[in-house]
Length: 307
Image (cartoon, rainbow, N blue to C red; front, side, top):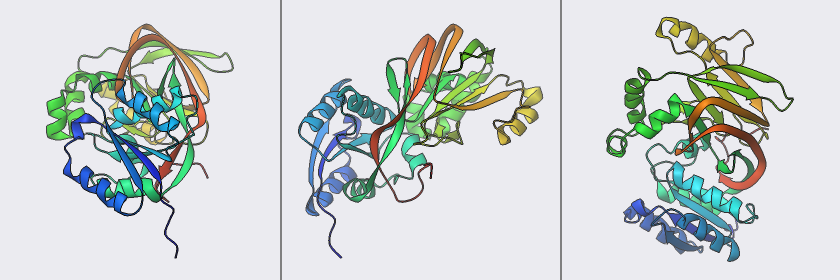
C-alpha cells in the first residue's frame, strides 16, 4: 500500500505550550515521516492571525491550531480575514483546559503525536462557522450565565481542576444571576420576547468543559442551534430536566431550542457572550451561520456531521 503524500504543515502554537516536550517530539516524528512542519509560536494577541496570513501566502496545505479553544478561534478568525479561508485546511492539536471543540469532533486529546499525525494524513471536510456581529466562532457562543461562568473562572482554578472548574464557579455564580430581557428576531421578521438566564448558540455542541449546550448541532448543516434557558428556579428544576430531555418540544416553557440560519437578539442591557471562550459584551447581536467556510481535518468517525 502506497504511503500517503507528504504535506506542508504550519503549526501555530500557543506560547503557553512552547516548552511542551510532547509537542516537540510529535513535530520531529511527523517530520521524519516526510512532512514539512514549520512552527510559529504566539506571544501576544494578533500573532495567530499574522501567522495564518503568512501560511496562506506560502501555500501551506494544513494550518494547525495548537492550543485551546481560544487558539482555534484566533486561527479560524485569521483564516476568515485572509478572504481565502479554504485555501489551507485547518487541523487542531488540543492543548487547552477544556478543548471542547476538539473533544466534540473526536480529535485525540492528550496525545499531540496522534493529533498531528491526523493533520498529516486525515481528510479535510468543509464545515460551517458562526458569526456574531463582526466576530467569528467555530464552536459555541455562550451568553448570560454561561458567559459569566467562563469569565469569572480563575485561570489557576482551571489549571487545577480542568473542566470541573467551570462547574465549581457556576454554582457560586448562579445565586447572583438575574435574567436578561431579550427579543429574538427570526429571519422571517417574527419576534419573540422573554427572559434569558442562559443562552447558547452552537455550531459545535459543547462548551464549559464538556457541557452539552447544543446537543443537536451539526458542523455542516448551514445552521446554528439556538438554546435559551428562561428560568432556573430550583423549585421547577425537575421540569427543567424534563424539557432538556425533550429539547425543541413546542410545549416547553423553560427552555427554547431552534435551528436557524440567522437571527438577531436584542437585550435590555449589554449581554456578556463568550465566543469559543473569548468574551464580548454587546446589547445587540446579529448571529448567522457561514456555510462551509473552512476545511477541517477530522477523524473518520466521531465528528457531528450531517450525512
